[in-house]
Length: 560
Ligand code: ADP
Ligand code: MG
Image (tube, rainbow, N blue to C red):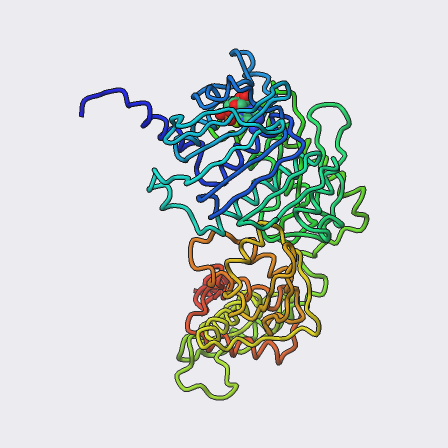
């Protein structure tokens, strides 16, 4: 093909791909525009997962009637004027790309009015071109309506997830800005239902309470940070007793711009070092105040990644501010012992004596040919550090990770029971209400039936609460709320959602490392392990058994 300049429509559609990845990106851009317009009230509506309709209404400055068309030109912006302005950006937008990008991949109409005008303006666009314009009355502010997103980009449409998943991303985007702008009243309607409403009180904790629920809000500590000096770090973080199983609850804002930052995530995790169990993460809402010169916000088309000038200064400022809040306010940190004090002392004589034993014929971890009742292939020697089972087998020493082993046993059991639709359930004496975030509510909506199959009978109870009537018998008496939270936080799975439910359930139901077990319990565990078809790794892929062969031992002791 010969080289030629692409036509404008094609260029716009290609460029739009960078800014508008999914419905939630449209919501993010429109909300940012409303915030830049100094709105105190922003209502977001989405239907059909945002593909059918997205509407953002604000009471901000509005766009002057004579400029509405211009706003849809590429690189048209009222926020910066010259090169130097790029160094001192204080608005969320500045690239002048959002409106034209959205109009390139959807039908858009805008109704807007400024304070001084007697009549507002209405314009409507299809395929990026204006199809209608007229004056239309409205109070000061702007309403942007986006319909049939990606109808003209089938490739993009194909990659979208279910409407509930797309809605959960929208809910997340709005929730993030609600957290960053507590002085703004946000309302979010998904498929006609109000799922989030913030009071606009100016107190971040009020936003936290609406987004994450009262229980979480009650367990948050204020990060006061340095008063006026920069970088300023303020916000709220969870007390150590409260944690989550994913990093989804880490929110960072730089000069109130919502960003993704591995650096800041690591700083936060570092601050909790030693206070949370492995695999647990805090809930963090942090706003970083920087002089605009200290940060480059123009490194990504969607502006959700930034470049800090002095990364290590920022890292330690965030880490210290959070740590300080934890030390000052969480007086008795609940430290989970890494190596439990209750560890049973290893009996020095046992493993060595065991080495003199002669081998059995079969592999220790494959099912015995003709299982004899309670006849184990492994001879249990004891428990090490309340975490590992020490056993002698056909060819040497076997160390079994008790948690990993039990996890695999339960995982297989759950899969089997589910296939036969006979998961054991435990009814709760009284239904237990659970608060869910707007994002979780969407996941729940999609998976009520799946969860019921696993023994969680849930029903909606108001918009932000559900009632739990039964739980899987397997995890009754354990922290099933934590399990449920974990499941509702897992939106995007590579594999089957139900598979990950089984994995999480097994993990939560399994005996823990650090739990001292009676001899009979050790025997039962090993017996069940021996019965398994595939006992070599736990469902997460970690090994269950470590084997030290007699040959290896002889070598180590210089016997051969
Ligand atoms: P940017 O935000 O980068 O300037 P956009 O394409 O998002 O670019 O918007 C273009 C311009 O339209 C903005 O600079 C602003 O002047 C105007 N605008 C867009 N949305 C609103 C709104 N909700 N209220 C007031 N003005 C708006
Ligand atoms: Mg913008």
